[in-house]
Length: 68
Image (cartoon, rainbow, N blue to C red; front, side):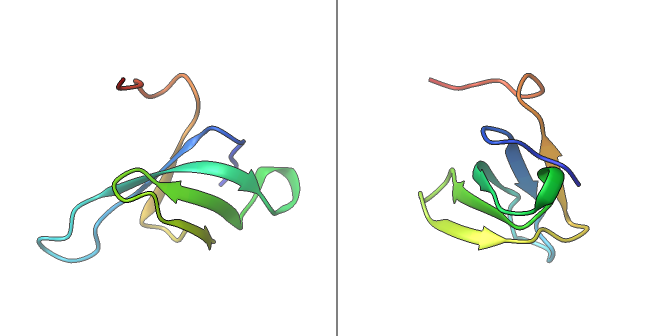
């Protein structure tokens, strides 16, 4: 998994009824775009450092639409 600042991280819900969440990648802490990433979740503004698992996908800039 490789990402750059400004990409989106889509984290799929792991249990029935849990919604997918998206987060903006604010900082790449690993080498060559690899995790961990400092992210801000779009739904509540919470910031976290995370190493995404297999339930997450990186959406590179240009692969998602901005909503204003």
